[in-house]
Length: 86
Image (cartoon, rainbow, N blue to C red; front, side):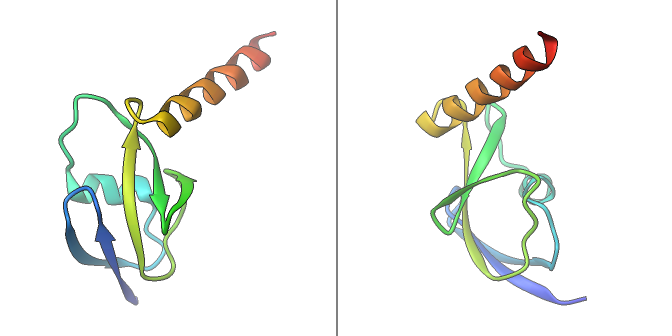
C-alpha cells in the first residue's frame, strides 16, 4: 500500500502514513496530549471533520473547542442532536 507524507502543524513534525488513513486514526498515531478533545482539523487550510480520509500529501492542524472554529463545530453538532430529538 502506498504511503504519503503528512506535516502536522501542532507538533511541527512530518511523517508517512498509509493512503486512506482518517484524521481520527492520525490523532491516535500522533497521541497529541490536550485536556480538550480535538473536534476537527484544518487540512491544507480547509476545515475538515475527523472522518476525512487522506489520499495525498498535506498539512494538517488539529483544533479543539478552545479554537473559534472548534466552538462552531461543537454548536453545529448540538443543533443536529436537538433537531433529531425534536
